[in-house]
Length: 135
Image (cartoon, rainbow, N blue to C red):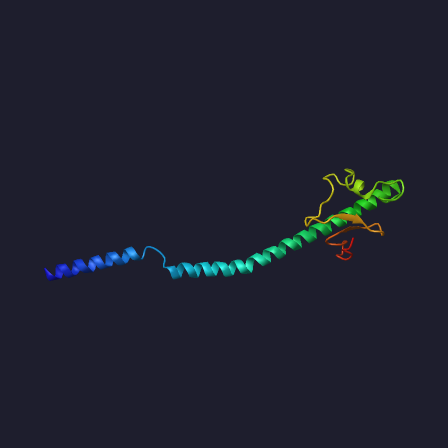
């Protein structure tokens, strides 16, 4: 009978142990949260930098497309937008012959304007090589 009681107690202890091991301890959960925080601290700034680079490249592509359309407009009319008797630059951007998908828009919220050299520039990203960001 003594052996039977010992086996029964041992079985009860093992049963309690198994019940306790079903979840995670507080330390394990905290460790996982800390690791996820470190990963987020590294990944989020890199993601934001990638987004800014993509916006700048898109804007520069838009400026290049506007410059190409400016040359085509000059070839077609003999004048650049803003010249006497020609469309204003704003009207030029809305011409569907040159921009069938609509006027280009800077993804960072900048506006496009025409420099005195008859080249386009963005108020945020500048001209096609990134210089001349002033208005």
